[in-house]
Structure formats: C-alpha cells, structure tokens
Length: 380
Ligand SMILES: [Fe+2]
Ligand SMILES: [Fe+2]
Image (cartoon, rainbow, N blue to C red; front, side, top):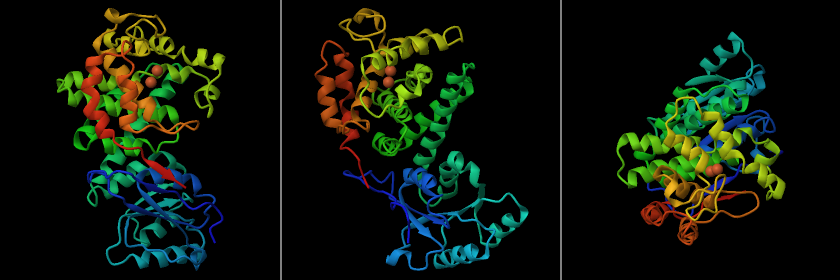
C-alpha cells in the first residue's frame, strides 16, 4: 500500500480552450517516499497517477491506465523484482504504449541496457530529474499532445529565470543570452496558446517568486499582444516583466519565502528590492526604460509609491504597463496566507486604484483580466 499521501488532482473551474489537455502521466516507482519530490514536479504537467510496482494490489484500487499519455519510471533497475514489476505495467500499456522516460539510478552500462530492453524512449539520470524532467517530457510528447508545449515552454522559461536569479544572488553579471531566451519562450508560448493556459500552469508553482515573475511575464506578453505593440516593444515589455523583481534575489530567503504576512521590519527589507535590482543592472548596458521598470514598478501616480515617491509625469509608460500586470498578478497568485482572487475580482480592485495606476492602461487590460477567468483550485 502507498505510504504517502496520494498525488493531488488538479481541478479546473473553467475550461482551457483546448490548449491544455488533462494528460495523465504515469509515474512508476519502487519507493514511493523517494518519488514524492518528483511527483510534485510532474503535477505541473497534468494529472498524475503514481503506482508502486512492488505493490501487487495497489492498496486495493483498480487503476485505469487508458488516459496515460506519458510514462516515467523512477524504479531502480538493479534488482530483478523491481524490473519484473516495471515490465508488468509497461506490458499493460501495449500495443500503443505512450512515450516512456526511464530514470537511471545507477550510472552503469548495465542499467542503460536494461532501460533499452524495456523500450525506453529516453533515459535521464535520476539526479538530473528535478531540473530537466518536465522539459524532456514535453519534448517527448510534443507529437502526442500540443498541450504539453506550453508546459515545456514554461519549464524552460523557469529554468532561465532560475539562472537569472542565481546569477543575481551570486553577484555575477547577468547573461543577456539567458534573458533573451527566457523572453522569447514567454512571448512565443503566450502567442501560440492563450493567457489562461499560461496562468493555469504557472499557478501550480510552489515557489512564490518564480510563480510571480512568470505570471507577470505572461501577462506582459499577453498585454503587449492586446495593445498590438510592435514585436520589438512586445519583447521589451516581456523582458522588463521577467526582470522587474530581480532585486528580490538579494532579499534574505527567510523573508522572501516567509509563508505568513511580513512584519514591519521584514516589509521594509522587502521594499528595498527595486533599488537593489536597479543597482544590479546599472552600468551593464541595459536601456534606461528597462532600468526604470526595475526601479519604479512600485511607484504610484499620486506620489505615494516607493522607492522615490515619483509622481505621474515622471513615470514612463513601460513602467505603468508593468505596474498594472504586477498588481494584477499579485492579486491572483496563490499565497499561503490568503486565497487567490479570480480575474474579475482582481480587476475590480485594480480599477479601484484610481489615482495610483494609469486608468487608460487599466481599461485596456480588461480583456486580459477576463481571459484570466476563474481561480484554479488545487485540491488535495
Ligand atoms: Fe516588485
Ligand atoms: Fe512584482
């Protein structure tokens, strides 16, 4: 019997316009406890079935495998009982077995031969699974379901974002190629799918900063399309969104990842992130408009914002656009201490911030807020 909580099922309150199908990924394991982390990564790609290949009756539950569109094995191939159990499940999915990704726990030619004999489509070292798994699955299943494209694109964009934050944290100069690649992925994915599909995947991220930056980036790309901006401006807006909270890479993780509301001191530390980010990007050849976004995205038209208390005329359009996306994203995000708001509810709050945010841009944002739709509920 499985000795851990079964994987969450994702319930969607509104349909995804066919862009994100509910795929079932089958995760076969011989040690459910070890596979828990992997399971949480895979949940971002759709429904997940976890089966312990060493448990003959699966806790008495009959498992329907008809919706499986990809298989991941997290089974050690060094013991014959495990291999036999794995083979039995793989055989159940014949003759049209979906793509099969086999994780290798032993870096030996014997386990590679074993994976080949089991008919693995691809192999990946188990220790690399946390980083590369979702993207690789997306690549493998692209021909099966276009839905996985957006999951793969978000996973790749998140990898670029992780790299950007790692460089920021270590004080190394940012690699412009990583930023450009992240921007391209966001623009391309939002153009090919729609904002709702983007949001539905990003909502599943546990890391609050990543969830936030990817939400703002997706909304910025969608907003640029909505405003029919030129491709160059669209890229600039999306890039600014990806980088706008870069300064958070220098905020202590105890504050950044605090599951509760911040106290006054912590809030003061958190509010240094625009200046920190600005300092990090200064003198590195970034356009002034980009630096302005990083420094001024928490300014308000009435001068009540921070860090500089800028008033309306000193806040450029690019900043105003990002501020609208930033506030909306913060309202619809999953936070441990409050429920996320639906698109309509969040838009009403944004609309009520008259005097602080640009009313023309807020009005123009409405279709995007409507497309964001209802809140996704992740039930245990
Ligand atoms: Fe910010
Ligand atoms: Fe932000």
